[in-house]
Length: 160
Image (cartoon, rainbow, N blue to C red; front, side):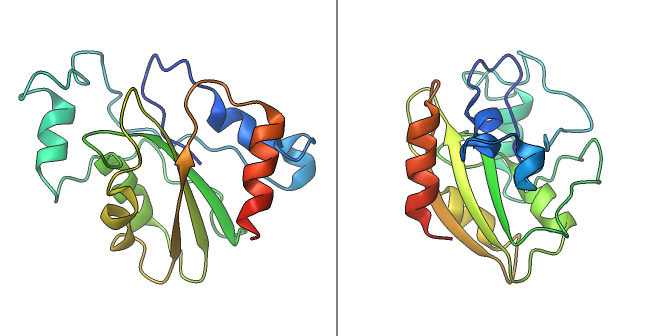
């Protein structure tokens, strides 16, 4: 499951479900894009503009942008990989909306992210309250185009 910044060229989120060398459907893995009800424009994502939509959302810890749909295949999984772009050293508030919409009790959520220059920062901390009963793991940054072997090694090292 992932949220992608529009115009993003990183494809790690699309490679991860097949990191074990098979097609996602043969692994029982689902690829699901978390989308806002109102798509972000490039102006919305201008982090230099304090009045841009993303700046306003990230300054308000209670901001919960609406989801485009609510049919994520969460119920049938015990481990979920949750990918997103880093905004202001944390996950976009759209991820809080997503986590608060479903019951993640007893599930493990592994975070992964992309960024132009920062790490995961306080992402896990900012998401934990939105998924009570879930185990949220700091994952790693997956910038660029990690190869299949790199993703396989990372997933295997998680020992899930």
